[in-house]
Length: 76
Image (tube, rainbow, N blue to C red; front, side, top):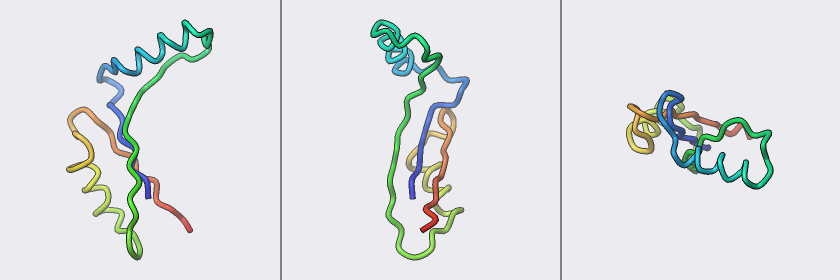
């Protein structure tokens, strides 16, 4: 399972802005926005408990005041 953590849209993203500026300087002017984040890959024994994993993401992997958490549960 994968947990992606990104800054909330209303929070300034200096790293994203730096990448966006560099992309423009490199001739990639069609990119309108960049948001950086964190990507966690968790291996879970048995069937994942979505509520438990969401709690882990929101309490350990992210700062819920400024970051959003998105779970990507494997379907295999």
